[in-house]
Image (cartoon, rainbow, N blue to C red):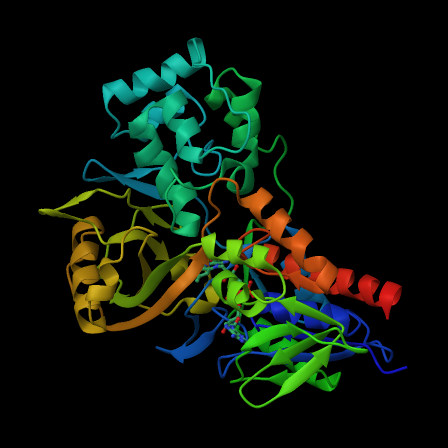
Length: 472
Ligand SMILES: Cc1cc2nc3c(=O)[nH]c(=O)nc-3n(C[C@H](O)[C@H](O)[C@H](O)COP(=O)(O)OP(=O)(O)OC[C@H]3O[C@@H](n4cnc5c(N)ncnc54)[C@H](O)[C@@H]3O)c2cc1C
């Protein structure tokens, strides 16, 4: 009998993690299937990319990951990179409300003050917004949610528009560069949906989500040589295990094949026969690649993605006056900027978060730009973008000088949106594809973020091995 064969489509962290699991996980498995991984870009790792810039190992994509979830930490330990782990060195954030920086109170849960008193202590909210918050505590409005609903629908109903758009959206929408009126409560913020279904005060329900004892370990972590070193190390391990890694090769289609191998993966110049395919490509790409196998895969085109740009700026520390505490500033959408609105949705104080980025006499900032419904960034050249963002820095952070260095990184369609009905949609497509031997993995499906993407990839690897054991 011939050796089982698996093709992984996409060499982001999810595809690499799937190949790692297939090849044995912690210990290389000499009986592992033949594994071929196709990646359209010259580099593996998707947005996990580090560059040498301004005397630092700078991540031009994600700069850290949630360390209270186990998946990324476990993989980093497996790969022997534990010694390079770095804990986030600051906490908290500010919200730019009513022309001032307001420190988000310490008792906030996911950035949301969980009581009317805490909302008041934030400052910058109208009397009417605070009345909404108080009413939620004293006489909460009923909310009926039979299935999935948008986060915005719950929060606006219970706490009013002002708190929804000026307090909740900057944080919860900001993570995915999405809008709370579209994002699924079930997939993005399940405890919110549960609280709304249970009835009673939403703020009081939020308060119960705060950890009762001091959390163990860091909340966020990174790697001293940048998060790009994670996919780099994965690639080294996979090469040692003789996984066939093919950068600069796009998958063009997956079709049914007769005979011993039920699937065939096409590229411009090869055809690889396989027992199983793991699709860890962006959802619309997977929809196209899998169209001939199951018509249900067309539903994946409904997973929209937001484009974002991240602008890194180095200032002299004499020219910038950051708030005393916190890792950054969130700017609510629709915050006025002359006749326009702010382009920047958030600033991150990168070198306050990560010791490896600190340099004497300098401050390293990152500006985040772009939302699912805000494409203005596409009209700017890099030079104009730096100029506009620097003007916003002057205004929000009272900079008195120009940045010494700047770096623009654009991520077109990089952040998948989990709209209402997401979980059900994904379950339906998966059920249609699995009988064909196709598994879906990555950030469009099981949670955005590095830990969730790694977990999704590794789970697909485990499922693939079970599938092969049962059928090949
Ligand atoms: C701007 C930005 C900031 C982020 N910040 C954070 C953060 O701070 N913390 C955090 O935890 N997460 C963050 N994330 C999310 C995190 O980066 C993702 O969850 C994770 O990298 C997704 O990995 P993936 O493998 O699922 O997808 P991807 O990394 O997108 O991998 C998909 C791969 O498929 C390849 N591909 C496309 N078409 C084809 C084809 N036809 N054939 C072969 N290959 C193909 C692509 O080139 C890509 O490499 C951020 C994401 C972005 C874009």
